[in-house]
Each structure stands twice: as C-alpha cells, then as structure tokens.
Length: 268
Image 1 (cartoon, one colour):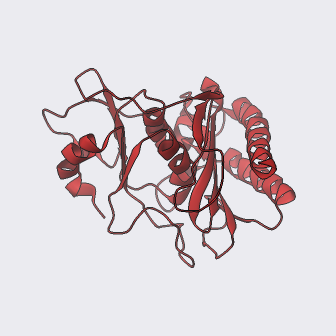
Image 2 (cartoon, helix red, strand yellow):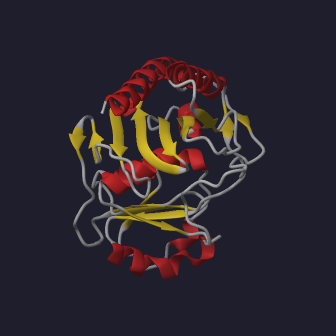
C-alpha cells in the first residue's frame, strides 16, 4: 500500500498548500470569460501550475490532464485529472464554496479522488477499484471519517442539487427540495456524504467528475450517465476540453428510476 499512501500524501499536501494561497486571493480577483462561458482567473492558472508541478515531481512517469492546460487523453497507464479551482464564479464573488479537485485514473478508470474545499475546511477522498482490477484500500472519507450515502427515501425535507443548465428537470411534485450550489464536485460529494439524495450536472467536464467518481462509488452512490456513452473509462485520443459528460448521481437505484424520465431534456 506504499504507492497509495504516496498518492494520498501528494494530493493532500499539494491541495492544502495551494488552498492556503487561494484563501488569500478569495474574493479579491476578477475572472475572464472563456470560450465556453466559464470564468478563469490568475488564481486558477497559478493553482494549475503548482498542482501539475507537484504531481510531475512525485510521479514523473504519469500523464496529467487539467482544465487549464492539457486536454487530450493518452494511453498512459496512470493519468491525473485536475480542476485547480472548481467554482471559480463563487470564488470571484466571495461565496465561500469552491474547491480543488485531483483525480487519478488507471488506464482510463478513476481509482482515486481527492477534493478539498478550503473555505469550509472539508476534505473528501476515496478509493474505488471498479473495473480496474487493482488491489487498493476501497473507501470514502470526509475529514478522514468514513462516509456513506443516505439510505432515506425522498421527501420534501431532502435535498437534490441542480446546475444552472438543468433547471428544466424541475417540475411540480419533484420529490426533493432543490438546491443550487454552483460547484459541480460539491453537488455530487454532498450525495456521497449523505447530505443530499441526488444531483444532476448537464454539462460537466472530465475534471469535474474524475475525482468524485471514485468517492461517490466508494460511498455507495449510484451514477447514471445521461449520454449515449458511459462516463468512464476515458477514451484514448479524445479531446476532453469541449466534451460534456452529463451525469445523474443519486443515493439509491430506485430514485434514479424515478427521476430518469425527467432527465430527457438534458440527455446528450
């Protein structure tokens, strides 16, 4: 397990160090609009360089994809997927919910994820073997304590998260209270931690999903691709810079069956 201990240590120490600086920048920087309509700041770009540098130093043989740099998936055995600042709009507007997402894929299958939210001091991480065939310490954690999805059935007192591009799925009689957090990773990790029963993202990218895939599955969550293709494994040669991966995450398969008819408007 020495390798996995090193993976966790590199992800943790890097995210904590980068997060400390981002807290100093929080609410003080302005963003520029990218071609896809999202924002990028100097803080995103600095964090991206720092994270890529730390990973490359510790694992020089591993490939790295990140939102702010390389987007083409290769045939490397190990690939790190980075979102240096998920929730940039929240970050620039002074809303204290944004995070740093770091995932590790084995031949395209996410097997480890680490997501740190500095303003609320929450750290999620998890290991998931999936179809990789690897022997690893499967589990999901929040601040080093094991987490699991809720076993509750939906009600008007349970939460479900939407993104800005999935508002059309809400209809009168929707089985849960709706929330919009503005951070794709937190939408799904709230399900893993049992705080909400589900969430949907209409246009997430691979850096929004790679880390949380391992954590959600290890926590017992149900992941449904809203595309004609499975969310993972990642496809060699694909440019993930403009490739959306619509996804529904719920605590139980029965809730997915109930909600899928409402998701037709965002299916890809």
